Image (cartoon, rainbow, N blue to C red; front, side):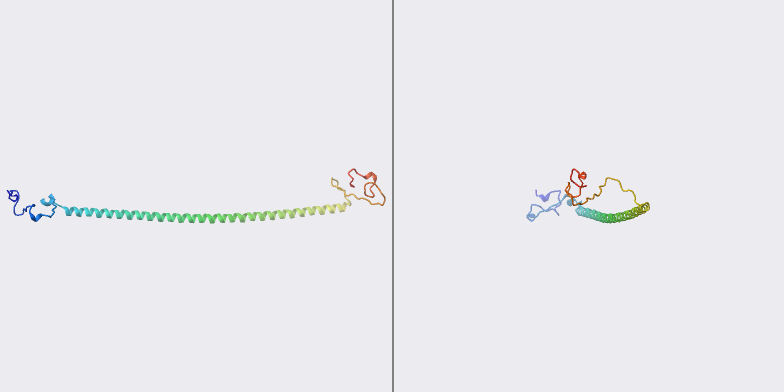
Length: 183
């Protein structure tokens, strides 16, 4: 019995796969193609749509991430600029306070010098006033007392032509001191 004589196969569309016309031809059939239930094109379209949706989602997420990165860069740049301006302001404020402190020190020193100059002038004036009053009082009183104290007095050596002890002519024998100095 031949294959095409089978009662299960309609001989009008049946072709013997072992015949010479099929040699070298490759055929790939799926059961859904045989029964007409294949939805390969629909599955491919659905897969393409899913892939495109995933691509769009990826692009949206990458755009959001890029936008967040740019915003962070701008924020950090603003913060750095604010820090630089604050640092510059602090430096200028420090320089100004130092300059003001220097000026204040100079003013205080000038005032102290002026006060000390005035005090010295007043002291000198008071001393000269006291001295002039003392001189005036001494002049009125005549010859005042001699000052007492431990200050050395000036001694006068008399010169004479006669010979005497002490090496200086004119030193009396009773006035010679043991050190040999004529005081």
